[in-house]
Length: 133
Image 1 (cartoon, rainbow, N blue to C red):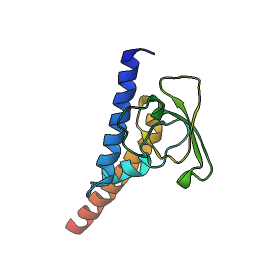
Image 2 (image 1 turned 120 degrees about the vertical axis):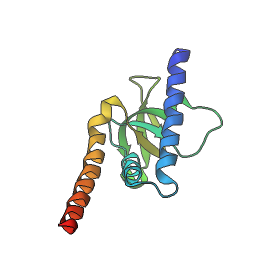
Image 3 (image 1 turned 180 degrees about the vertical axis):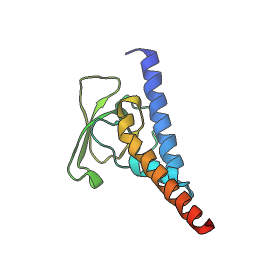
Image 4 (image 1 turned 60 degrees about the vertical axis):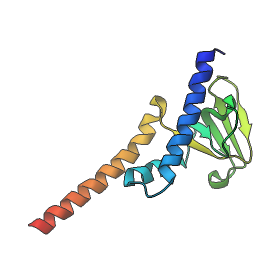
């Protein structure tokens, strides 16, 4: 494990926390609501970050690819991830919460978020054009 890889994993960890915090606080725009919705429902294959609590020290096992969720996804009994810094290995987490973070490998799973936002914008434009006629 190189220092560069560790710094990258820590960056992803902090970025995931920041994105989640931005999406769920205050009165976010609709895009923020949709991002929060997608982040809060990770799927196997997603890059995930554990957000159960801010840690004083970085835990490299808190960032990885979600392999599976054991139990009800809304209140998982156990999250199983492949840590970013330990490819091919599994790390199980109980009493934890994870959020999905967009990355190049899961971009197609995030595209629905933008499709939904664009559909809402198109409907709003059509309604505005109908009231102007």
